[in-house]
Image (cartoon, rainbow, N blue to C red; front, side, top):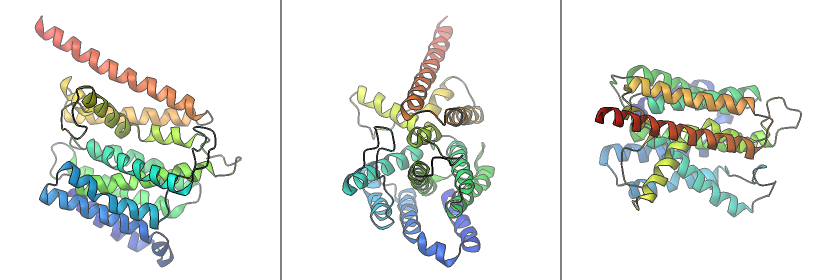
Length: 305
């Protein structure tokens, strides 16, 4: 129930820093976040099936998209500058939020992993939104980042508290929300804005690379075996490091370094196009996957000898 501590700590912090006008502006976002928090807590207490948990997530996501009016409006330069019809943008956004929220939830498999990756992502978004003057979004991101720092003190191996779905789904929804805000805000900044990312979609992919890469990788492996995407297994990225003999701590640090390297990649290539950044990220992910499989094969061969 570590998610309860994080959420309550953040709410207290925001009560001290947010004005009534800011609470009114972001009221539907906080309603959606609280609903997702409730879904996670219900799952932690009642152990919902994967399908039940997925269906329960539609309500907070629909609140975010239809009432808060948070949705993608175009391809943002990824495929030209095609403007979506409103209903298409909403449908795509619902799908994206559900995928990203559950992708973050799926990486919560080692002590400190979800907290560390969440901290990296939120620190980036909190800093960027602050620099461009979106202080309210920055406060939200930074308050949750602070909550994760406190949580990690108790969640680092050997952990004394766990995030659970209460925390993972809540932070997953927050990260999804901030990613959509980042993509839309960055693309519509003035061209001479020094902190504008001309390829916001590819940049967001790099920021979210661990949950995105891990989830896509696992789903592809399951489908290749004709298994349900909801089937639990030990093919996640953190399992691969454990199979190589890494401790929980070293696995978390290694995965965090990978996320930071992709973040640096996005910063270095910030003036390049979506396709170039995405292509390099894809090649890098395939390379990481190959190296992990190669190292495990060598280890297995050495044991046989």
